[in-house]
Amino acid sequence: MKNFVGDKIKELRKGLGLTQAELAAKAGISASAVGMYEQGRREPDSRTILKLCDIFGTSADYIMGHSQSMTGTAGKDVSEVFDEFTQILSSQQGLMFDGVLLNDDDRSKIVDAIKVVAALAKQQHKKSLKSGEY
Image (cartoon, rainbow, N blue to C red):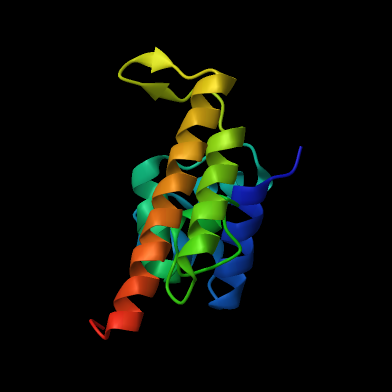
């Protein structure tokens, strides 16, 4: 199994020219924890991920392998963001809505609703451009 998180941490750490010990000191964790993350023997918790994002100047999605963009959604067309979100929604297991596990039909309905809202927003945007509201 691929070690996305550990590989990203190692890549980003080396890109900044930091040792494991230096990264650990900046993140407030032990050097052995950094080593275990990079080897795929442990996963960082959410607080540690956020600290690493601050240190590396990147998004959590990038570190976790959910996005190819280091900086999140800046400079992206909204359709790209919708596409990424629907892909994550379709593949993410264990998602719940109001405490009830989503099934494939539920996921499909949510994706369809997002597409409808996006199409309506696009249509409204085009109208606004034509009328000179922007």
